Length: 147
Image 1: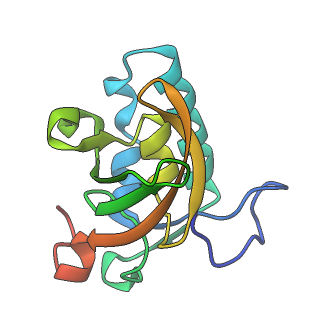
Image 2: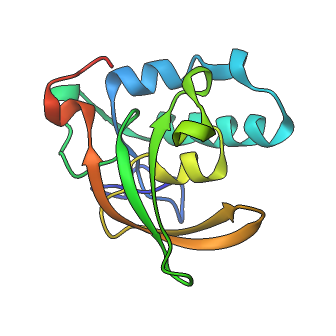
Image 3: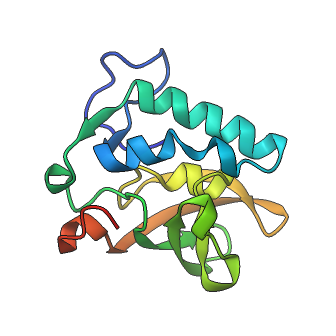
């Protein structure tokens, strides 16, 4: 997981996730969309992170934090390749349109990330180190609090 403002109250070695209340509530209801063991494990980790998170009203989330339905520009550190993806709920994910499920390793790493965040995850069959270059669109920054 990523963005935090404090580590107090988080399990050792983990940072506290900064997340909107609606995103937290909706993510806790995603078990019906789990299709395989990997998604099940990611959802379990997300649920744990949410329980130790800093949930805030959507109008209070900083514009520089990736929330659900945010569109971000990522750069592969090794190849320099740039990609744009939207962080999506599982039922709305569509890889062909760049909508990445939060129940994928990439999607889970993006939730709560900020520009400059780096993480390593599987991408196109190989491990890639990615950096968040820019949040192109964050719903809450545009007044869309329940998108």
